[in-house]
Picture 1 (tube, rainbow, N blue to C red):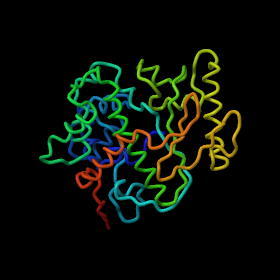
Picture 2: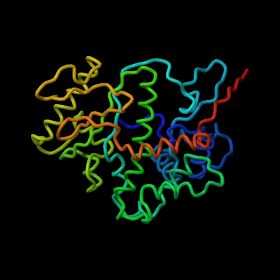
Picture 3: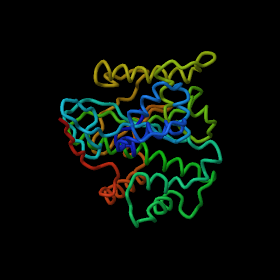
Length: 310
């Protein structure tokens, strides 16, 4: 529901300077990481958090160095990992994942195409790649609120939809049973969409959570929202209990949700339950070609080197 390990920049290289930089932001200068950590451990944690935010530091998983006698958790980059066992899994996305980012004019002051492409790929002299992607989504239009739908589609495809579809194809090629979904429902409980006051059609990232878990709202759910709550909780409970979200057809769940095949069949969860084949096919085909062509330029795909200590 929050993406996969193939989402760009989920796993980063280790940055051993972070503690030093935060300490310096708070007035303590040192090149010694241990001293920086000791200092930060005595500082008000709210100040540490503010300093890290002011510096624009994003804490993400990183590939660990390997030491004798210590069991590491993350030992390689996602691009180098293999699937070792087959397990049933439910995986999918909302149809307008990243609309939550586009609710103020400041968002449109950046070239998000260059920003995402250059932070994910080492392109060297291929400086025009971001513009190629921009032309695919916008044509000759400039970045502005007038192309909000297209920019949100790019962001959603790059960070969620294509990485998830890539992972699904990899899983089914290894024999996993995968239930692929797209959540499109827009109601009164789509809390992320409501919070950012976005008028785009469809469901935003995390909007589906409000139909699975109790989130504080004034008053009772509408009849329409309650039906979606009943459907979502039944689908997930069935999968947890039986390994199948629709073990039997019912009035509540009148459409059977079948495991995905090579055609990338998708269970659409909207006002009606339905099936779709290869969602966003044209856009996903573009990214299939793009990722294949630039796969050797991908950052953070190096094999981790072992480091041992006495």
